[in-house]
Image 1 (tube, rainbow, N blue to C red):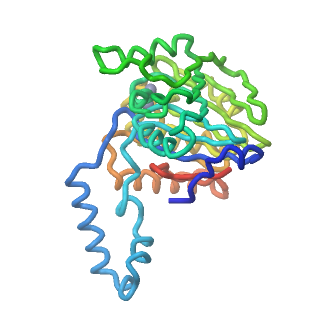
Image 2 (spheres, rainbow, N blue to C red):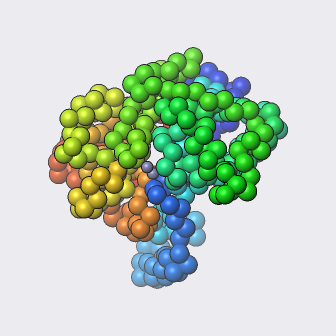
Image 3 (cartoon, rainbow, N blue to C red):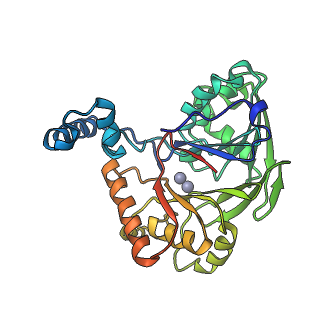
Length: 333
Ligand SMILES: [Zn+2]
Ligand SMILES: [Zn+2]
């Protein structure tokens, strides 16, 4: 699943690249695989190998490499969390349940010695985007420094609220790392020296915000939890302008197109609308994200295939790359 991201801030401080790793890609609620699903995967792999002559005489590794991800593995059931590293900075977008595994990885680095620094960006505070924070070990280590950014003036109270003793045994004050909170404004760009972070308001119940991280003409977009319907199509030009020319767009693909018509005002999108927006914005790669918890790996694979057919039919000749996110997916921009 790709190479390890270089985590030494000394060696990559001049690195103009953007390194991305997905730790949680599921929407709404953590969705572990059911035992019966694992059983079905095993049966289907065995059946494929038995019936397929091309595997005869091949090494186990070669056979495994040939099996698609939805069969041999899983896209993942953890809720949103994406790690972005650029110019020696560590940026964590959203703190869904995927952040627990990110915390385990970071503890192997300077965060384990209380010498880590990271920036948090919160799209919004629906539970699936903050529920992993109490399990993020680096926050418990004195000496680590975290800057929390969002467009919500009361972000601190919101995060503290989920660790109220009525809901969680350990309060946020018990987490001894240094925590500073900063307010971002929609449509404004914040300068972090070598890179910038720009935000945009997205249509979603209670509001959500998208982020564009830019360095040296390269850009990564995180746009989860947004909906387009007849009430807000007039905001489309502004969104397209914000997205324009980005290398990677991480996009809310919670529903199929058919489901999106039955769930108006639920706050989510489909792969087709993502592909439409990406094509009109000149995006190079769209990464499907925030899958509905009812979707099996098989279904996510089918949805991706439908997306590719849609792109081919509606935008023949388009260079847009369409890929599904999965836990452990790494991108370099
Ligand atoms: Zn969500
Ligand atoms: Zn939401």
